[in-house]
Picture 1 (cartoon, rainbow, N blue to C red):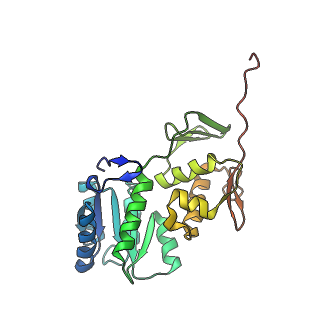
Picture 2 (cartoon, rainbow, N blue to C red):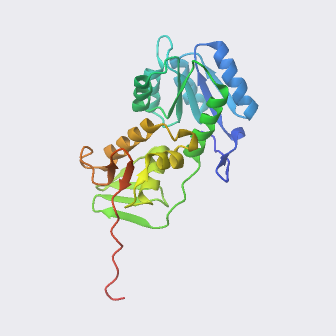
Picture 3 (cartoon, rainbow, N blue to C red):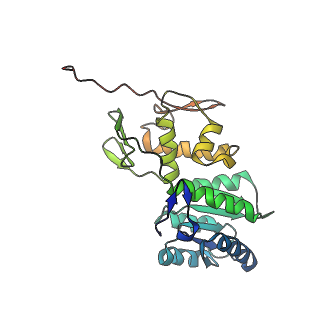
Length: 252
């Protein structure tokens, strides 16, 4: 990936490369034109195999990936991308069914947009929001947080340790954990978390939040089905368990 320029939580498009993968030349032209007008560098692929080659050659900062493609469809292409890269991916589909969106998100997509009808303005908004939350760092806490003997978090180094093993979090997972832990003991509503982690335009996309909470639990919890860190307030939101106050030196 190229090194993005970040100023006041604004990504400079001129520093970003976007890979557009679709077998419809007219749609690719529309997407490329709208992205290039904003300043992005655009590379193209007409199928999944070309996309995997482009991923290695061009190291894109973001991928826009069609679902319905011959030979290697978008879902299988995404699986292969995720085997080698955490690059943010927006999927395009002609089918606007929640089951398809959930399937893509479960495989590792970061966002999902319908091609019918296709809105270049919505795509640009989603691209900007995804790049912002991927490359803009969360404010770092200067102290290491020892939640308990199983979980330690160092936000200044962006490191999470679970039962002595370093765990890798994707950028969105990290931002979600940051906001939960920095409000430990408080209820965070669905709308608040979606706005802070994804952006205001995602306030109604509750399935994104449910899925990423599942991802975090799978990585952090000893028993994800019975979590002790990230607790559900049914129908309202989530709450990270209250942190113990740091131990004080008895000699002080």
